[in-house]
Image (cartoon, rainbow, N blue to C red; front, top):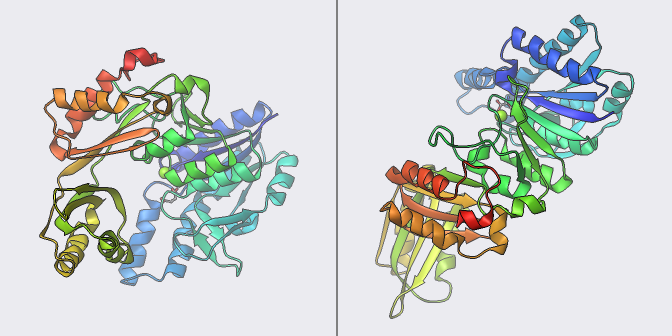
Length: 413
Ligand code: ASP
Ligand code: MG
């Protein structure tokens, strides 16, 4: 007998027919002798609808009241789900975050889970009930309802799996799993069977659509095996698990991109101690997140500094830097928003050299210029012109033979 946590997203519980279908699916797993904990999102579109209502009433909605409001979406689906199970002749009980108790910090609309009391859940499971828990919500020590941020139900599921020491956490969604790249760009993208937590974290921009990335960090910390799969088929999806030898034999496991960044360059910055601090302090004070940073030495006592920010912060960052540039006597500030970051990810890179240069060759063959490069142990990223993103993705996917399963390292370089 296994204890399984299954989470279903909004599209899987979008109406009462879908809720009944999902209940059947959970019941068949239950009838095989498993203890079942189900975590549900609100019906698709419901959280957006509720946020819209709030904005129609208060310009900048009060965050505590916002949590009171948006947490109701999940209350609807869990109660209906429990009814569907009962209608089918089995027993279930629905629980909200404060009934569990899922204790969180008091940062309304983006609270973090502090602890989970598993006692009540276990009692219901021992009574043979299917336990249905509202995703995305928790409660503060004072008893106020909180929510975990958009997409937070995945985190609820993984946190429950960790607290209950569940055998698996299955995240059901409307796609088949995690792919080697975006299937909308590359028709030969392949579903990945098994991927390590670290790779999944690096593949955030691919994974974010199927799995909320905060939940992956949690899964890694508590070693929760996560199975991302489709609600609408019986097919196996992608297992996100601890790294193993097999994964290492593959150098590159995925190609990803991010069109959400912009580049900023400050030219001819005086090359003196303290200058970088002067540049980045106002940026971080303004809450602007910086991703890649490159600094170069030029001949003489000047240097150029280039970095990327999230595109929506570009205008603010440029304004701040024009002030800073004047203060530190830098020559000019320039930037571009039409850039993209293309990355290759794979744990096999740890023990192999030459992957980065292979990537550069592939891009060169396509005539794509690389503006910035950054690497981590298991990732190489290049900033290129945005209009070449699709071309770069397809070329890299093809050259690293990602459409084929278990390609030996020799054939990937
Ligand atoms: N219902 C919430 C949202 O739409 C939480 C979730 O679905 O994970 O963001
Ligand atoms: Mg989601």
